[in-house]
Length: 607
Image (cartoon, rainbow, N blue to C red; front, side, top):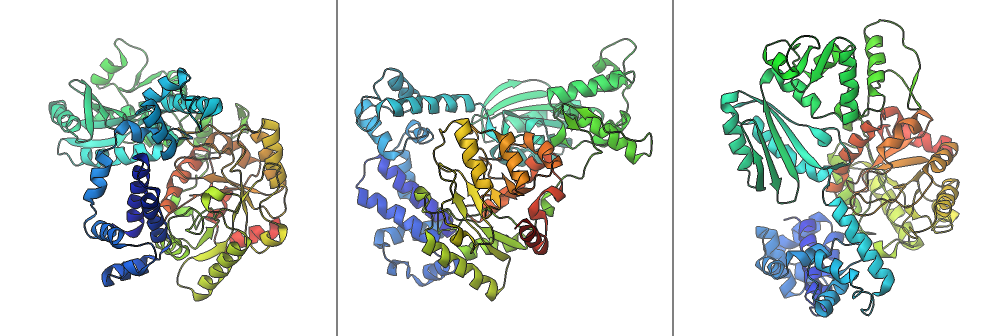
């Protein structure tokens, strides 16, 4: 294990010990040890482990050093495994309920015998939680709301998590001798922010279908096989995520992939377009609408047009290729028709409108390789898990030209926000690192809290020392829509604010967005040339993709930021790029596709 992975284990040990009511000094020792490892440079950690000098640091007693050494050497710790096994899964699940920490969970267990979310719900509905010291009616109501959200969200999964399950399965299917082609389809392929279930489409011969379904149903992560037939199988994974496997003849593969990828609205529009041309489009093929038999029967008789790729399928219907992420039934077919006409020098394009969105030839959507850096990232100076230099090294390894550091400001006490003196020291460290060279250029910024009245957390003199300012809401989420909107607009109008962070504060599958008039916020951002970030953290993906196309057409500039709290978090930009593509964003509308000169020119011209 590396130091950050070890720090996460120490942090979890501290949490588990709190749940058990262990001595606070012991729990704090593990938590403090985790913080110390996070703040330590990777090279120093490796050097100390090799030299056996970790125990020279304050807080690292013999027992803690022994546990760190075992994790470093083997990646396992019997003490941790035993501790985790002593706590029921239901109790661990209580940590997912907003507003509940180890101390409150311990009180619920000891005083009410609550050891699962279900038991907690029963206790709340009976009014027993409100009577506990330190809880009350307000807390009980919030817990019930959190439990309701958890139940509603339990059927969906973050795209990032679902992708982690799907990718190895697709690779495994492609590795089978019986499989000719294999892809994941559904909302995962369309890059929706959350996924209800997985769909796998496989091309194989009928006589090989049983071997493919055998392999699929025997996957180690499968907890239950819910259905199984000759060419189909459905399973449920331990995480609760469900998956369907469909096996089709190779000549039907493209049609099945298209059918099980597109949204209902997209597929309806495509079928209507086919009918207008005397054809019938389905998962079985693209067959003549006239004549006897179903679409499946016609396809089996060899009447379907052939398509080796989805591009050929779209071409049969006189459309330019539509990337999967655009297939939502939101005017993409009309845009693909115009794009196809332009590409083939047919009838001239005209500007029309679908759902209030102007139709333009298909753009070249932004790609991951277009990104040159990112601006909203954290270090161990606030609530990050890696130091300034470690974050820089990770950005350099990604091939980035620059990296912006925007640690929290002082009002975010829960995130160890920086006060003026600590921020000044970080700015100096950033300048020193740039002077020393050897990696991506570092920009000095801040994620500055927007206070409840719209003021910023730092004075103008402090903000003037920075390269840029990300302004974000981290408190008073229950303000009315008018109050929240006025608060954010006031911050946007501040001349030192460069970009707005996570505009709605939502946490996917955990917390709803606060009430805010985004039309007014976007208007203000455009008027003041303030960038609105697309926060790429898999739990945020905020601003929502549904708003970007129209906003970008009006001139709103985006920055795809990972909101990284560790080095691996920088890779979350991939999720952001995928969502940006759903919002029809091009590289020209994303600031961090520009090189350093382009970025700095934007800032200068704005000021």
